[in-house]
Length: 364
Image (cartoon, rainbow, N blue to C red):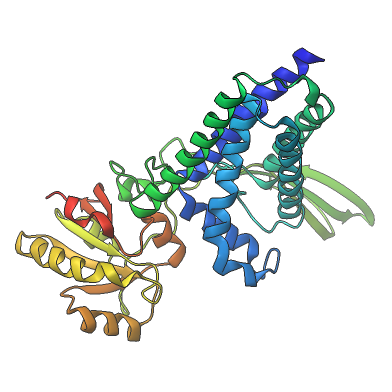
């Protein structure tokens, strides 16, 4: 039993640290996922949406710290029962999302690894089993340091998590797994590669022929002869690949200017998914920097999901000398985890991204 408990201890501890760190690297991204769960369409808990970021930071810090506590053997009873409570909640959440088909991606590993709800639910069931083993055999979880060493290690892990979380919130995620990261070409990511996987579906045809009801399953051709088709059931055997970027666009009131702007040799995009929620402290610095960039030959545009009245209000308030174009809010949140933030592109390739706090670090 001791060996089994220690194996489970290592597996659970390592997975909680890894999963928590990936989300701690991008707490804003995880808060957006929580907002999706809290929405009317999923859990119908809209009153929690304003607290999504705070809850996201609490959950991911607690997740990492519990993983560390388990590995070093700090307060085993508290640790294993906290892990049990957390995994029971996550298991319910992933089952609900999967069964009712409410959420396509659970966000368990951020943008690093996309899992379907059923894959997430299966993963949580395995973790639940491992944690139950730990609960039963918690007497075998022994500390790896002295009491003082355990206290120091536990405190340092907590401080490190808070410090790292604060850093990425004030700047940008240290690791970027999104299709808008530095070095990616947006035009290429909007297209499918030549070897892309095509969709494969089986069709079950229910029909009558000569007055007799018959059934035929094939890949879409259907029966060669029939009197009447009663119904057709479709089962997806293989999902089709989709482009890494699907909804990105740069639109004016009259036209789609995506390709024209992405082919620019020197383009800077000021991204503000919501002008209403944008941090106003950044606009004065953005005004100074974008004026400099325009003098150096850059094309400067803004992208937002806000309406025309708010665009005009912000432009006049800060004397911004560039035009805002329309893009989907979810896409803008994905491009850069800052509101506002800046992205520098060269013929569609992302050269640099900066939080408005780091606007002086912009290189050109």
